[in-house]
Every structure is written in structure tokens, then in C-alpha cells.
Length: 239
Image 1 (cartoon, rainbow, N blue to C red):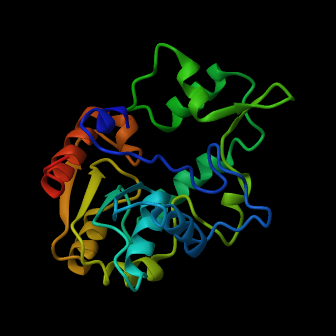
Image 2 (cartoon, rainbow, N blue to C red):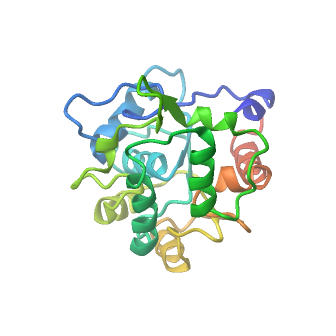
């Protein structure tokens, strides 16, 4: 985000409901229509239509919003390792990891070890304090992921999303410049899924990131930035 700002872009880093510093939904609802309307509420405060950049769940919500809006709400769309037709086996692997630690971690070291076991390709940081961006220390002395566990409750399936039909229908209605940034070792996005999205959005651009999984920016941040910056510069050359 800082690098985008340094290039002259105005950046809003939105924590989805139930994630980060945003409040948890009192009713535990986190469906695509609600997530997309949260984005729309922010867009409505802006003087011009933004470029939406969303990874995984955020990308799905952005795609849903763009494809289901009667009037254009964005000038460009960047989807980070998410397509309507995802690999369900890979999605189940991610969900299993997220559900496995609902009781938190005794230490940052324990959290780092769990991440390393799930994603051995990612270099282990020298300082585990960076995990505090994604964890919260609660009064019981344990560290918990900074999202509402009900996000993973039966029937929601929002990380990664499993609303294939809704997202396919939305993709058919996307008529703005769109980029897919894909991790070539992703558990979620397959060649078939990319081909399906390209069929629905014929002008789709694709930027492949080698040696990166579903969390593309975390695995290969410099390569991710390159793909994003090149696309944005072409869409907004005066920025």
C-alpha cells in the first residue's frame, strides 16, 4: 500500500466486516451481497470511480459488486488469485487450516510454525512480530486470527468463496478493464478456472506469479507489485 501511495495513488485499505479492525457482524452474516454492499458504501463517498483490488474473498466481493451493479461503480478491477470456478479441493485445504486454530496459539512462535507447515514455500521471517498484523492477543493470553470465526460457519463458506454460480453470472456482466493476478502454485485457481473467467471476460488480462500460492502478495510481494503497478499505470497514466 505504501508503494502505491508513493506513486501518487490515493489508497483505501478496507477491512471487510468481521476482519481486521472492522466490527464483527452481530448476526454472523457474511454473504457476498453484504460484503459487496460494504464496498459500495465506501465507493459512494469517493469523488470518482476507483480501481478495485481484491484478494480471495475481497476479490469475490468486488467481482460480485461490479457484475451486479446497474450503474458502473469502478473504473478497473484487479482479482488476486480468485476466479468463479475454483478448485474445491484446494479451497477445502485452506478452510481446514483456518478452522484448525479457532482456539488460538500459545505464542507467535506457535503461529509461525503452523503457517510454515501449511505453506513451506514461504520464507520464515526473522522476526515473528510481523504476525501481529494478522493476530490479536486476547485476555486469556492466546493469539487469535483477526477475523470472526463465524466467517467459516456452515453455510457461509466465504474464505475462499464457494458461490460459483453467483460469481459466474457476475463475471458475464463485467465490462471494465480487469486483471487477474494468479499464483502459479495456487491451491484455488487452476488453468480451467482461468480459462472459464477469460471466456466470461474476453478482455481479461492475466499476470502469472511463479513460485506463489493463493496468498500471492505474501509469497512474492515484488512480483505482485510489478503486475499491479503495470496494470494501474496503463489504466491511470496520469497517477
